[in-house]
Image (cartoon, rainbow, N blue to C red; front, side, top):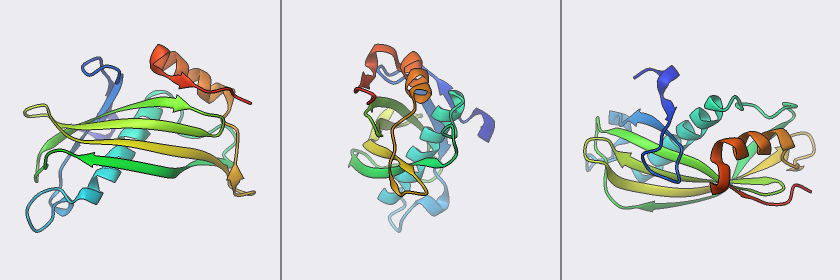
Length: 157
């Protein structure tokens, strides 16, 4: 699998409409030979980047604002091991005035076992002011077209 085809739209696990693939590297594992719990965060980051790449949204319009992590809750159900192929399902479940909440679910491809879930909230920040900024309507509209009725959309202003 190459970096340009790491993610794809999918209908296999509703309400998720997108997933990305990654393979467990040796450096991702701990002394017990399983994925170190903190290594799932980069897997979720990869899926989020591929999700937005697919939607043509790698950067917010002005470039003077960026999404930053506000909160991350992760639950672990089963271990992954070196060389496992992982499919990370991701969706944007809620857009607030300044924040976006993502849900993730990592499954081992070999047996479709659910290993980890996460809920992450990112806030759009004005880099110069270091304050929360309103999420642009164009961002909201693109996500709403992709996620449809599964997206919770708070009032924009």
